[in-house]
Length: 621
Image (tube, rainbow, N blue to C red):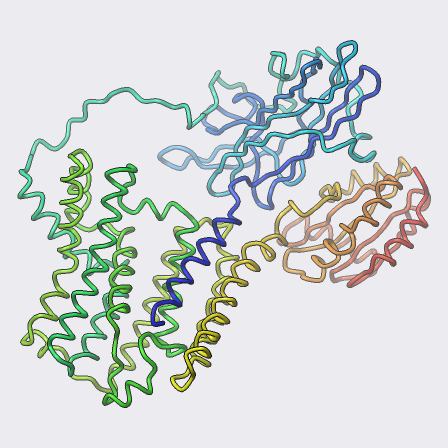
């Protein structure tokens, strides 16, 4: 039972993150309308908040020649359709840093909701049933992930979408890309001329066979094994692993009054955990080409490690206890016994935490080893593991060495709490390797990890029966599992555009005035990410099937006025809110097409019936 909590936590967190981690930061829908031989296609792409897509379809459309990236290329398909160019919207300018000196430059791209339009012509007798689209690009925040999506028709789409279809878009126009080899479009934005350059497609990049001129000093296998052993020794004092090692040293103090054989067994168990992880790392290096610490490139792995280290820190603050309950420790003279499983698990943890660190001799030793045979790779990795494990074997095998360990006392409680803070610092360190867009949801997940650990520590008492302790364990794991779902799916969904079906556009006062002059009804939702009531309105009322159908029937233009971040545009939106009689959100306003100066204004949480009454009062298009 001692380490079941942690091992199961790792499995649950890993599974939850693997199921719900998102690689694409954008998603699209293809809508097609066919009138005789005339085909109109609209692609509605929504990019996650804060992320952007590069402009396309050619490298030259992205900005200066130092704006490295992958342009968004859209290719239409259809056996019996001849396509026009893809009409891209006007891009925005983004600043990005490139080069060795982080020289800032500007690139062109898109964010939020993006609409692309294509016109096609059906061949005689064709139905257009196989129309589709392929999108290939790059979504970026502080890092970039590929955006690749295949779309099939999702129906006719809304009238509001196709009212924006460009009338001048015709089959065979020269400025566009199509499935049939049409020329690349002339950029629709003004920018300085750039030299021709191709898009960076990382998957297809190849390199020549280099002849590296390495350090002329060479060593025999024996020297490399010694260096590997020294590198393993040094890993024990690296900041990545020091917190767990400190916990182990504390356990040595706690076990100092026990028999030599038991203490030595604990040292061997801890060392066994170290060596098992090094065997796995050697296998990854030999058979999968994985380098030292590459598992930290996987955000799922980092989240699992953060959760486990955080749980360890809570045990240092006595939220729950590792090993047997404190009542047993009291009966044994105040010393809390540590099991072999606990020691083994801590050895594994110490080694996994050590992998982001690279101490002296480690880099050169690993670089040499991966060019050798499989047997040599395993030998080098095992020698590093033995170097890391050696201090614990020596300390636990030598009674004289244990005499220098301070005697148990009140100081141990203070030391344990200090180790708890050191582990929390390790959590912060691990978060520096996590993708920025996952930080908020990981912190939310840690709240559930803390609740699960507290539940175990509070209710898993020594006097419980085995069945009752099992029930307490299952309840703790359920809390963590539900927390993974809530944090990385439900909570994360509030900040994703994937749940939205309304054709929202960013609030623009000029666009508002234009639609009002045309006699169209405009709906403005004043919102912010930090406003939970706003999110409730959006996903439970505005996105409801009934309200969406009403807005489509009435030809309503839906605008989102976001005041999440402060700035000049936020001040402008707040001025409009003041004109509408409110200084706070949630706030929504419907400007009817026949009387735009007499908008319907609603504050706070609204209902479907309330919004139904408003939209029914608006004129038909």
